[in-house]
Amino acid sequence: MSWSTLAIAVLAFCAMEPVTAATHRWVMHGVGEFLHRSHHRRIVSRFEANDWYPVMFAGLVNVGFIAGFNWDGFGGLVPAGIGVTGYGVAYALVHDVYIHRRLNWFGERRIVALDKLAEAHRIHHLYNAAPYGMLLPVVPADLRERAGHTDRNPLARA
Image 1: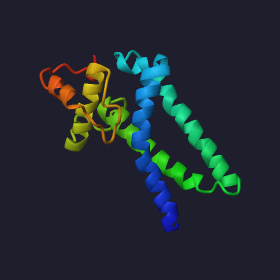
Image 2: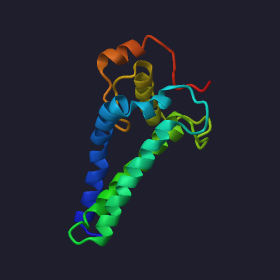
Image 3: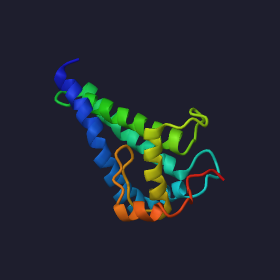
Image 4: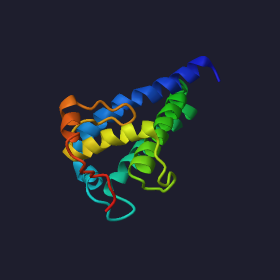
């Protein structure tokens, strides 16, 4: 693997945090809220309408892989797709597996760094507002302050 290939993959991984935050803010809490709304409700089944988002995103990445592997001049889409996929895996592990405990891979074990991300996500669920990012969430100071005065946890299982 060349350095440029690795650089493209790393850059794509890093670029996904602001892309994810923007998509979450303006699509999932905008025109696509009809799907995302299910994520802000108590879990009633193993799957929720919001689960269509990663399916659609994976479909887009696969189109990039097809182009990258098959068409001259599009080869850079392969390492970009690897970076985006890596971010998707990290996102799923943090968000779905650790924070929402949709899979019991961690049991009751707590990880301090991931608990900080979980707290940011709790704030998002409390106020249906920022932060919209996942791996590097930017929590507005006023919301952090308000959340510090409540122990309500909308992420807790019923």
